[in-house]
Image 1 (cartoon, rainbow, N blue to C red):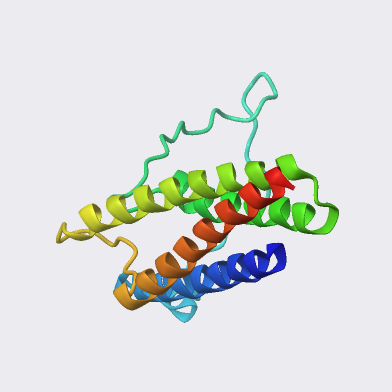
Image 2: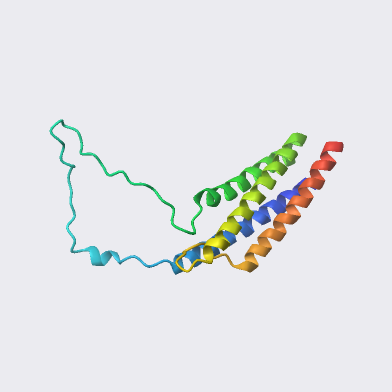
Length: 167
């Protein structure tokens, strides 16, 4: 049963990768295109070092405040896939060595991944409703496929962890 769950988790990851690629492609298609490199051919290119101050130090650089454009959620965009990979790794370890606490650790990571993914989906939906937003545009069909496969993974993970705890 642990192998079936592992296959389901891998299918969930595959559906997630497909979803990410489709959402990223739609996002890039909606973004304004940059100027081609040929248009910059006549621009002057400055080479050499930055002139030093009287003390022999480089001049102070600008202090740029990093801001996130509307529709982007870098922590969620990183956390959901990273937690998913971590959960798959824990489940693989459980599958191969049958150390029971790993099943529950993998389940906890899976639930956390689920909550982060739902948060990402909710924030993306809200920011996608703004007209000036360049938010991720996930195809609804792929969201449903990813969610249904993930739901099957959760159910079978719990069943397998309970069976492993009793055995």
